[in-house]
Image (tube, rainbow, N blue to C red):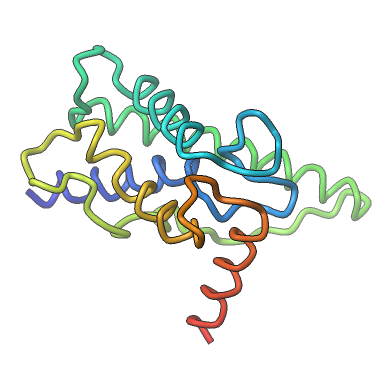
Length: 162
């Protein structure tokens, strides 16, 4: 059970990494048509794409082996990006490279995606947290999260954190 919880926690970070509504200043990650707003349809399209990518055997469920493979792939890509950024920063410093410790398990334990605890994740379970975030961000409940609504959500989160 503990392994399933850890694997599920790891998948949370994978799932949420690509579906976060509170996006960086350059735009919303889920904004497929690049109009500055994320619609519910765009969010569901992104969730479907991510789910299908992880669902290697195409059975409509994410099993532990698929989740582990996706998590390892995500970690490898993140390590590559970190290495590239480190090399870029070393170039800017004239070749000096600084080390630093990073936690590999930052996303672990953020929540349980496998809502019913059966060891597999359905598409509905996979997208539940992202859809809940979308609903919270969509202040006027029109099915669209605008840049202003994302900014307001970020500010509210900052205020809660103190």
